Length: 239
Image (cartoon, rainbow, N blue to C red):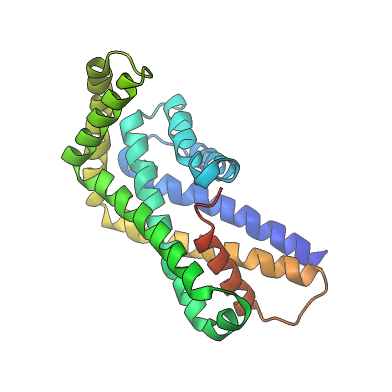
């Protein structure tokens, strides 16, 4: 029972750290934002990322919920983009570090280890690169938006693409302005990164606690954590 309680405690701590980290980024752009809002938004992101294919539903639902709480779409989009970017980078780096520390174990136990690792690194790196491009390049984002809307208009899924473009572009201006402001907040990134590191490694402890709750003790904690890190990296965008 104590190991199950410890696993539950780790899960709760992960959820709280998700909210606190998000709150740091929210406060950088929106001073009146409250911590309970951030915790609820973080939980919504975790839930919908688990429910939707390729973990695509978490961020849109967070932005939708933040808009209902009073933060405009542009600012909430930049907050979620920066938070997601920090999380993905640290998750990939921590997973690679853990795998290297237990490389012999993975080479023995995981078939096609090199291939699976390359796929995991490439998929996450592509996501990070696209997110960076979307955040940094305003012109590139506008081009993608225009082409996307005209394509949707061609297949009769979007009426008045010009009008819709101008409406969305107003929010994109707020998004890029928010991203530019947050780019100067080094303390926010440092604090957010440290909290994310703690959050990720606490999350890696959950499988070990569950493993011990079944009465097993053959594997050490570092090996179980490394296995969880590896699975997290390669399955991040698997439906």
